[in-house]
View (cartoon, rainbow, N blue to C red):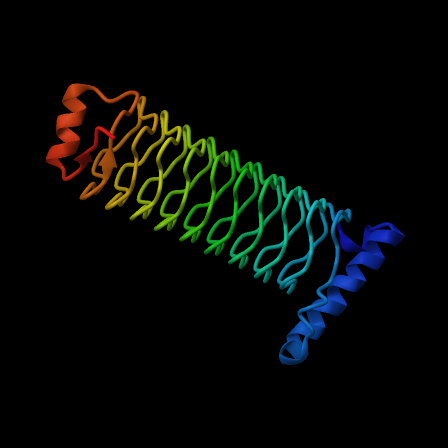
Length: 243
């Protein structure tokens, strides 16, 4: 949607956003962070918010589907239960953002920074997270099915119980990540760095682990692991646990 074709309510919302963003740009040290902009539940569908600064804004339950937020500064923003389906968040800064139970199906998060974000219960099926920084995220029981996470940084991420089926994690950094109880069925982790990662009880049916680095990676009670594959993993530095 072109911003000049917005209805009056959306025009008013856009003006509030632009004013807030401008104030942050010119007066950030003097901003009263105890009273951030409240846009919770608002309809921001398909708005062009390229490069906007919305630090600490309340966007919980907002409709941002198909919105253009590439290169936006969203540090500390509350996007819990927000609709971000099909949104463009390429190279956006979403560090420390609350994305609990948000919907990001088909969203473009290429090269985005989500360091320390909370994605628990979020749905990211078919999302593009190629090269994104997801270090130290919490994404318990989140859904990433068919998402692209190649070359993504997921060191120390907590993905316990997440659906990672048919995900592309080629060359991803998963050092010390918690992947226990995840569904990695048909996922591609070739060339991934899994040093110190916890994959106990993860579903590894038809999972590709060719040329993955497995030093200190923990496995155990994994569906889809044959005796031959188990021996191969151990020979490559993995640790097999019976617990």
